[in-house]
Image 1 (tube, rainbow, N blue to C red):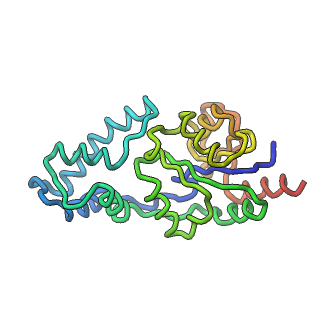
Image 2: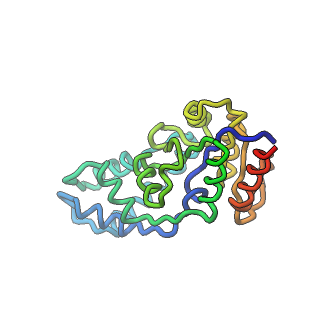
Image 3: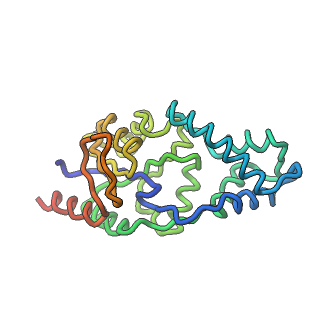
Amino acid sequence: MRRPLGVVFDLGDTVLSLDSIDGVAGDRRLLEFADDAAGLTAEDLNLAAEELGRETMRLSDESMRQQTWQSFNRLLCETLGITFTVGYAELEREFWNTAMTFVPCEGIYGVLDTLERNHIKTGILSNTSMTGRVLEEELAKHNLAHRFSFVISSADYGFRKPHSRIFQVAVRKMDLEPRDIWFVGDKLEYDIKGAIDSGLYPVWYNPQGKPNDAGYECLEVRSWYELANKVGALCSH
């Protein structure tokens, strides 16, 4: 096991945990900006979004291409005849801030302190339909935005993990060799597979103790305290 020179983190359920989501509340907020709601309620919009979402998520997983929240909702709302007085970038932020509540994963501040003390670079690479700007704003709410040198959202690049293209962006931003970068995430099929295929050292954050059904060779940690101790021990040698 090599001492890392850089660590790239997944975001959802790795750095931040989704505490609650209320899609109807988010859609209700969107309709406050509607010039013409086409007679639809927030509940109507939410049901239509769920139906379209099942189709687009299947296609995204098959192709490893990322549809953005903005393009998804433009397709959805224009199909339904809903028009707005503001742009979709502003609607994205309003939906996120209304519908989504996140909390930092336990121990994340401590592991980031360990990495900082040992001059190890950090970044984020996330599969999400939301832009990196929205993710950075969420991180800032928890005093975490300044802890990462970059935030990569698949929405801004068109490819999703585990596609190697988006991992290559992270490697370039780290300005390190892939073998010197640890990639940490909670999803075997996206994070660990992608890291292995791209030559990064894979670290599986697995606080729930799920089985490694895919049989990927990786470092498994059950808590951030465990990872901090491993990094600290490597850096002390």
